[in-house]
Length: 131
Image (cartoon, rainbow, N blue to C red; front, side, top):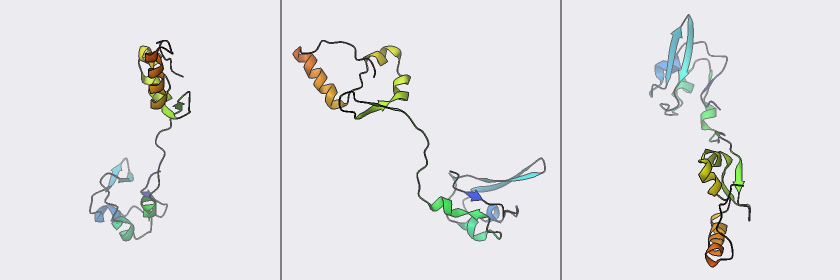
């Protein structure tokens, strides 16, 4: 979601640009077209732009919603014993092929149990193989 939004009431007067204390707004002209720009990293979220806009074109409320935006989604790999999340498919795919063969999808508890079984001779020592 773009937090700083300007609606169709904007007439390009640039009162917001002229009054922004953080210099987070700018108006640029190119090819006979004016574009209003907003820099979220500079924005102090002071709402001066919203207060000074004579057209009520700035919809500042989106910056105050305190919501979460989805930025990445990954498939999960779970422990093959208990189902606890161990890592993501993307992380697994980024591993070198030889390393990937050694990585076994086990949570830390079940990894330790497997190591104990190997040390006691109850299990043979072999590569894990992902998934």
